Image (cartoon, rainbow, N blue to C red; front, side):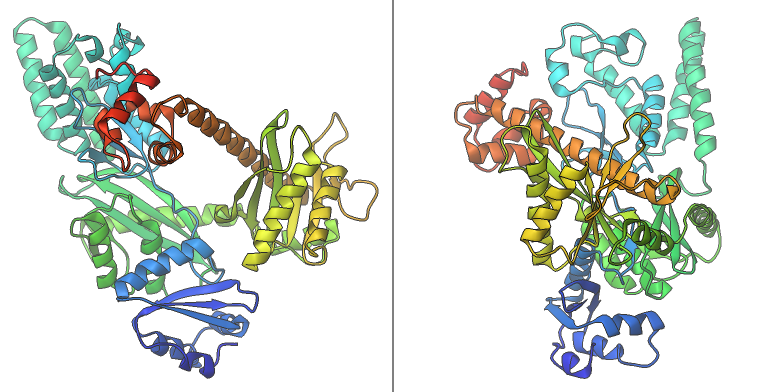
Amino acid sequence: MLDQELIQKAPTEPGVYLFKTSKGEVLYVGKAKNLRKRLQSYLRSSESYKTRVLLAKTEELETIVTRSEKEALVLEANLIKKYRPRYNVILRDDKAYPLLRLSLKDKFPRLSVVRRRRKDNALYFGPYPSAGAVRQTLKFLSRFFPLRRCSNAEFNRRERPCLYYQIGRCKAPCVGLISPEDYQKIVEGAVAFLKGRANELLKTLYQEMEKAAENLEFEKAAVLRDRILAIERTLEAQAVNLPRDEDLDVFTLASQGDKISGAVLFIRSGVLLGKKTFNLSRLNTEKEELYASLIQQFYDEGKYIPHEILLPCEPADRELIEEWLTELAEHKVIIKVPKRGPKKELLEMAGKNAREALAARLAGERPYEELAEKLALALRLKKAPLRVEGVDISNIQGELPVGVVVSFWEGQEDKNYYRRYHIKSVKGPDDYTMIYETVLRHLNRRLAEKDLPDLMLIDGGKGQLQAALAAAEELGLLKEVDFCALAKEREREGEKIYIPNRKNPLKLARQAEVLRFLQRIRDEAHRFALSSHRKRRKKIAFESLLDQIPGVGPKRKKRLLEHFGSIERIKEANIDEIANLPGFNLKVAQKIKQVLGTGEKI
């Protein structure tokens, strides 16, 4: 338990502190301007019940001193993402949302979908709340602003127009059917629309329509009329009562008990691009600290950060967070708490979406504790499992085998704990040995981290289960970790569940909830195994093609793989981009482009 003796050893500088169990499991990560002073506050009787439980479980205290409060803020966010401590607030949806990127370096620019904003002098628009929203925007834009769709590599080698030209969605700049000047006008129209300057665009289109009508070009005038009507309808659907040059993210949370859901509205140039809902878990803080933690986890390197963030209350360490966001965004970022007017209305709109998300979550969610107890009873486990991990393998006739482990914490996917292992000890199709190696390596790793799972679900039958048990026995963990195996359904026999020390499989037809949960883990492990094997095959193919290039050795090959990730990305890159990589030069870049056969002139 955390006591005065431990706290007195803490430094008085700014930094981060970690509460740990005797096994090294990180329970909570926090930051402080003065570490000792902050830790002493935990011993006050005013702390909450959950905090007292946390302190009772804390056996070890680790502190990390930083040079400033801002460094502590960044380190705290990174450690929370790394360890996902059970007593911290955890954002369940902290992925990067899609952006539209317009490259200004190209003679004929194109729009592409990316997840990260780079410092490459390109124009970025968004973020959009989903890939579907991006596709819808691109579909709309292609009707009225027919920019090219093809990659640079395809553009350079194309000899005749593609299908998009035939259906009027591209002007075929690849074969010279439009001049750079006329193409630039299309680009300017698309940029004006995406930047929210649609009124200027509409004015220009009206003038063009009237001119076409005066010149008796009625077909052209009709096309422009339809374009104007479509843009006006889109603007009406997206309209919010804000100036056109404002970029905002609007956050609101709704809670019931320890369940929290939230919503964020993305507003760019006064236009509402859409909203996204998300869940928070492991609540153990006041709302000011809750919003501070949300902002820290939502934004990170590469995400688009607007000029203003609207919240219903001021977050803890507001000035510090604003300074950190300003540094990340490279422009001034302000956190505001509006009390009236259009921005207050936006907060209310976000609040309504957050409450709806929470209601949907509560309606479809049963307490995991009940399911865990049923699991323990049905599978004869040592205890109700909190962390359940699924194991699967993937290979083609024994070639390039990959073993994977997926992890579920309290019934939810915990992707920070997903692991993949390239099988080293097996030649040819030998599922049992592959399972044995995967489980052995994974449990050995978890043992070193002092973070063992409660239950491991093996994809397969009795033989696969025995292989996993043999690996656990070798590490002396049979009493620490429970095991079971789920065999796929065959004809009308149904799913079979095998457990240790039982000859015949279990049938869980009457316990559909338990079976569905196990199937969900098995299916997720299968999906992850297939995608991991596909990536490995792609990487091997990538490396084998690079092996054909004179002057490209292991170090350069690794550098290309880390920077570009795929042959297609290298094909799309220009020679200068390759030549400027560390350890490369113009001569090597030219050889790479020649071997890959992009058709780029050298």
